[in-house]
Image (tube, rainbow, N blue to C red; front, side):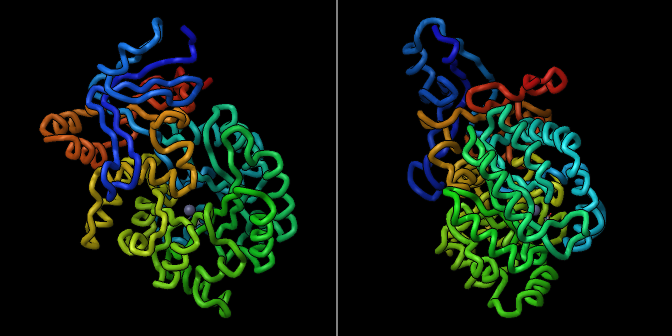
Length: 440
Ligand code: GUN
Ligand code: ZN
């Protein structure tokens, strides 16, 4: 039998649609996932599929485990992993004090390569197989990131930061050089294997109107590019945007004016928005990345998920490292639950897991390729260990039914919960084997 076929046996859960709809998910207590040439070939009950497997196909068995789709992180900064957990400030001071000096080092290609390798391993250790990633203003930072993502054959999205004002000299480009560098990177990387380019103005305050206009021009020049930026995260930031762009009716209108809204436009945070901004995000098919650990760590505010949903805005889940404090989307879901609790909203575990998988893929317009385990999808999946820690194990043993087990995973889970991660059918992380990494 061909080596290209392999089967995985465990409990299997994946989403077919948003959890509000009927039959939103499929669950197999004793399931089998058959993978061929890096894609899902079959999914179903082990008792149905095992007898149909051609002779000689290897079956990998995971006991006390749940297989689900790889996690999707819709907003993260790879250059900020080294300054994660920097003390005491809110967004604007935090950027000046900690972030900008850390990002300066990515002018050095070799340093960026080391960081990119560490970063992608950390994502995989946490079960995240796709992420939309901020690099720095230096094109070297993007080269290093995409080189490594290509080598690992991951579905990844990233881009060079555009920043031509209100930042230290060592970290600024110009409207023209930012355009030219982005264009060269797009030509080299966009659409190569599983990679996508995101035009990445940091946020409105650090780009001149000319730079924002050129960002909009780029989006019109290449098909299926992404736009990745920040929006209305912090009250002082919102006030600053008002002062810098007095002619625009609100923060989002700045981006709208420069034609930066639409499908594949991802705005991180979106906490301090008016109704008009919510409506415009919804009607343009734009996405907002909800970054719970960051919003709490930086004291930014409480994300109002129900309100954005009322306006039909696509929402993904982001870690926002290093404003965020964990690479784990299980940790994000734990904090998301608490943020919503504070507003009288709830986050049931099915919806939570949907957000971390198919919801994230949908937010990135990639749900035709990733986000669930339907035949034909790319075989990006995780194996979650119900018995990863003593506390989780005893809670799982007392759980009544799947919903309670999932809730225990999202409240008590973290990187230890991820027993294995597969990308395009290849084992890319196995817990406990970090040093003899499967990737080298
Ligand atoms: N707004 C502008 N830049 C950043 C950043 O690096 N992190 C966060 N959380 N918000 C930002
Ligand atoms: Zn961010």
